[in-house]
Image 1 (spheres, rainbow, N blue to C red):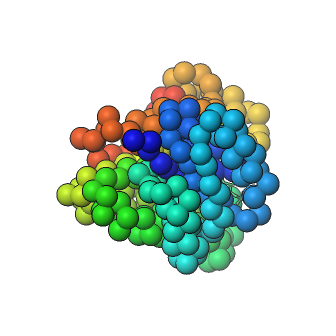
Image 2: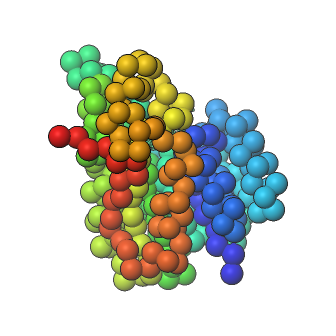
Image 3: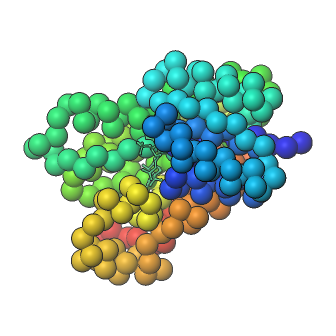
Length: 248
Ligand code: NAP
């Protein structure tokens, strides 16, 4: 039976790489992003169709509960059923604590954390009915240790790791696993904005064991493992995918 996955924030970066990686592994896809990214999402869709996989687009802002419910409804209608949810959509708006507004804090949590909760809640009834599900949450190395300007982001991603652990407990009896991936520095639009200073790039390359920064494709294999039947006995985990960055 063909497996079907929803990937949020799939118009570019890590989300696009995950969607393509799952398509290459035989999954059909429901691709989500916000309306403003519809053009790029169309490109991701065309790339998936070129691989011979089916795909539907479900525009939604994951910070909006009704959007999440509609997106899951459209994904199920479009593909027939959903096996996998990859909660990838996220934002990083750098702000030092002393200058940070409550709005910036709240928006970060609304997308990065509440979005994960809302998409999970929207899909979970369907997965329980089918007694099968794989949920993969894209947290961050910032959940372990963030950098200056990332207090809100780091807190929001730490919360995703906590949410992953408890959801794994709540759904374990229903054939559903929930795991998180914590990418290190990945050269996407977000990653590049976060790392404009060449000296900092050189510093991070030096302290990374593999002596390079990550590409979106580096995140795909671990996500595909958590999305697959092979990971049936793995749940509640948060895996660093960072090329070996050790902070001391
Ligand atoms: P990206 O290049 O900025 O792509 C993120 C995508 O998600 C964008 O298309 C973005 O649209 C979309 N998005 C934002 N808010 C959304 C919402 N409310 N609903 C639906 N989609 C939304 O970022 P990325 O680097 O690929 O990051 C993907 C995930 O990996 C994020 O959760 C991020 O926190 C995490 N991560 C990234 C890195 C890194 O170094 N890149 C490291 C660790 C973890 P807009 O741009 O229009 O907002």
